[in-house]
Amino acid sequence: MSDKLKPTDKTTLKRIPKRGNFDREVINSILDEAFICHVGFVADGQPYVIPTAYGRVGNDLYVHGSSASRLMRSLADGIDICVTVTLIDGLVLARSAFHHSINYRSIVIIGNAEMVTGDDEKRKALESFTEHLIPGRWNDVRPPTDLELKATIVLRLPINEASAKMRTGDPVDDEADYSLNVWAGVLPLALKAGEPIPDARLDPNIEPQEYVQRYKRF
Image (cartoon, rainbow, N blue to C red; front, top):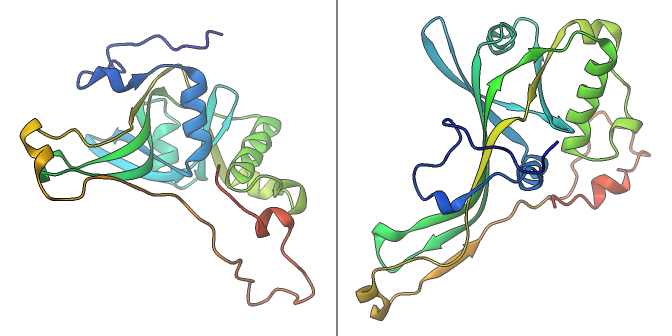
C-alpha cells in the first residue's frame, strides 16, 4: 500500500493547504500519540459528535462500546462518519489579539465503519485499545471473557480517506506590530503523568509496574 494517501474532495484542505499532509506515517504517528477521537455522524436526521477511545492496528482504526450504545448501533449500520483527532503542542502568542493561534497536529478520517464479527479480531482490537493507553498492560491483566466480548461492539474503520493538518512555529504578526513592546512567541504544552494513585482496595504489597511508574506519552 502506498505510503501517501490520495487526497479526495472530502480531505483536500481548502484553507491554508500548505499545512496539510497525506503521509501515512505522519497520520499514524498522530493517531498513536493521541488518546481520544471524536466521531461525527447523523442518526435519524440528528447530527452527533461523540468522544471515544480508540486503537489502531496497521491501517485500520478501531472503536468500541456497549451493544446498547447509540453510537455503536448507528455506526454498525454502515453510515458515513467523520473521525477527528487533535494534539495541542503550544499556545502561539502574537503581538496582536487577531494573530494569536495554537500549534497543533490534527487528523480527519472519512469513511464507513464495519462491525467486527470474528472473536479473534475483536480480541485483537480490544488489545489495541489497552496497549494504546499504556503499552505492556495487556499481558498483565485479565483478558475479556466470552460474555464481555458478546456485550461489546467493535467497529473497524479503514484509514483510506484521511488527511493531517498541522501548525508549527512562531506567530505571524502584521509587519507594523513587530515594534510593539509586548512579548510574543510560543508557550509549549505537553501531557505529563503524575504520581500513580493506588486503588483503595489494592493490596499494599503490590507495586505499580515499571511502565506505570515511568509512563511517558511520546
